[in-house]
Length: 276
Image 1 (cartoon, rainbow, N blue to C red):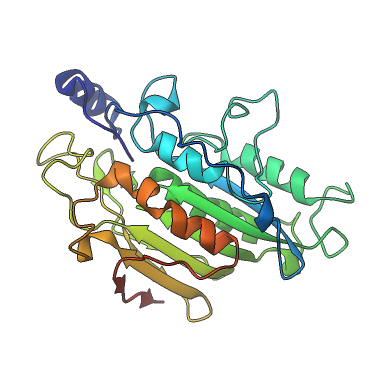
Image 2 (cartoon, helix red, strand yellow):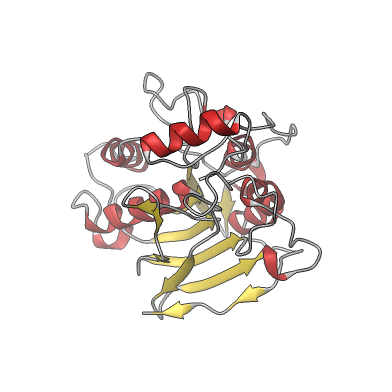
């Protein structure tokens, strides 16, 4: 979850009542980067991507900190899968935190089912799928991958996700209790987490001291078959002041390099990843 504090008392009261996370944003929009059309294929294989934003407050998701920054990433992902034109998320380059995953699955199947037989199999165009999520959306991205693995509309050879990128993934259970970790599905070929683990004093996600926030990226767990890398901005002197809402902006060059099949540069220190 991702939010900048504005009217603290009003937001905190809203969060306490709703059992949610967030605060008022201070910025909107991206910096005008053009779409990454040059990354449409990697080694001759077409790329498709899907993106999830963090949890928001209010009717306009761009009023929540971190949302404009993740949108700037989503718009440049190769082969971006967007919501159907007449659906609630069609105006955004991402699916929102509370979007129905059943609906998202239907959209994904429709986009990848190139022969229009209702299934995604070897008879359809070969693609690699990138799944990107920020904050709450980092967990939604994981949940989508789990659903793909268990959906009979996908043949066994099409359940694999090429790249799963989680930016400061955070979700709560039982109103305010944060999930302790992020379990990466075994169908993921390569996983990258870019996060902060120590909240600076002015972290945007310090909502209700001692009760709600700050929101820091959860520890990932991977199987032995997935390439897993976990990068921590809090572990470098130059980036230790990065807060939850700033992670998408600082991580954008690395994310766009990864989905383009290039080696990212300028990364913070790497943490060891637990295996299961």
